[in-house]
Amino acid sequence: MDPQAIHDRFLQAAEPFGPALAAAIARAGPQTLISRADLPFAEYLCRAIAGQQLSVKAARSIWTRVENSAGGAPLIEHFRPERAEILRACGLSGAKTKAIIAIAAEARAGGLEAESLRGLDHAGRSARLTAIWGVGQWTADMMSMFYFGEADIWPDGDVAARKTLQKLTSARRKTALTARRFAPHRSYLALYMWAHADAPPG
Figure 1 (cartoon, rainbow, N blue to C red):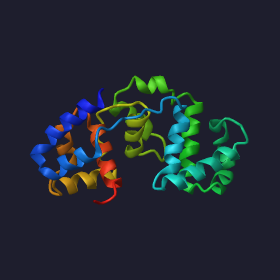
Figure 2: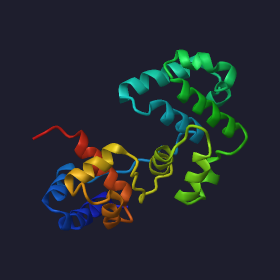
Figure 3: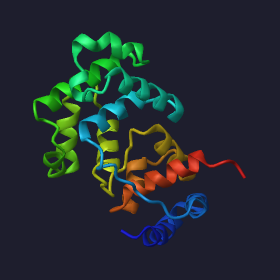
């Protein structure tokens, strides 16, 4: 998928929604969807859970402490109930600790093999992931986008993406409906919304 071609199509698709959305897309420039499939899936999922609702800096700091606490052991082996207090001491909340331990247990049981999950569609993959304690739809969306590289996911549960799109279009129109105009590249629409939300004013 050519980011420039997607960008050009998005500029046209944005026109019916008024000048604000098109201007935001133009200002952001072509976006690239980066897949992190080079990492072990279960570890990437745990790291995503650990970093939720934290700044990038805080999330990185906590995860570094988590990795160090393993003492070189495989993280999925380290994430066990008997080590919950060690993980809490790294800065993880009780809920995040419980979720990471549940993810690791599922991984050890063979339920989180990347290739098996890759063979599922987004709905099937989401059902598999959200069956794990502490893994919600937002996390499943992020995994499909940033691990499996799926181009057509609109993460309606992401507050920043949703509110930014509403601000640039209409608060009365459901963002999932607006996002349909950008299929089959709705993941890129989210990238544009995040880029706009993070852009300095001016």
